[in-house]
Length: 337
Image 1 (cartoon, rainbow, N blue to C red):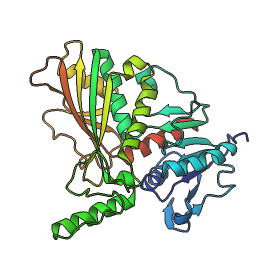
Image 2: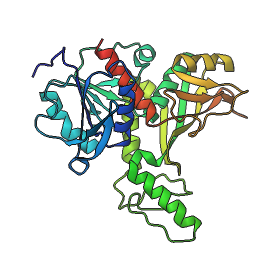
Image 3: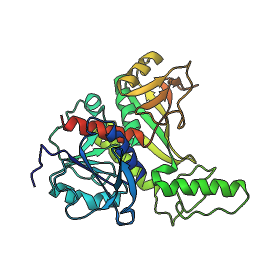
């Protein structure tokens, strides 16, 4: 079906998710605030009462005509749910803004984060039908790698620290419960992650968990590869994903080997050009708490390695819900101008 370019209808599929809620709030403050917004989700979330544009709204279940007449379809929630929505949204002619990674392997999907054109030198087609919005971790790794290319990047190794809110409300509730149980010397339940996540750093969850850090890491890695474009440049980057026992905020630690001597001020300038907010030595280093509610990626000042010449350390953080939601809303605003 051909899209209606005059339509002012949007759909958030996965409206009950944490990211769906963030999208709803940002859209209410955006240039698209007056548009007709439809909230839908999986069967178990249907009927939930929420708020949209200052009025009560009920989340509906996804049906055959859910995306009919929609100009923009935001896909939030799980990857499996995103895959269920891709076909109907495309058939309805909606432009899809996908946060679920459901379109990640689609060769026709356009990778997206706000600085991607400037950093890659590749233009983004405004008429594309599907956009795959980068995760906070993918955005941070890619932005840093592209920023450092001008300084002769030889190797970049990044550790991403994943909060439990990436697993949704159930992840938050389990961390809260486990923390309380451990502080009162009770045995912990672990129905969501299959292991103790409170007070614990992990590279994988329990076997019975529905959440798989390895799969999430591969999704992030696919985002990075899509943006880097060249296999030789992509091969310079290594990424690991680590569970952090915090509720919100993605943090990242990176070490870069650079071919050319460079001053700290030049590195900071390159990172700012790539979209980072760089906090200098007179300011506190960014943390998962300090970046709450912020739209940007944050970095502390780059630090030279103590012994290895040409190696620099980077530390940063971002709001894991706000950053991708803001990125998607900015994309929607650009597409509808």
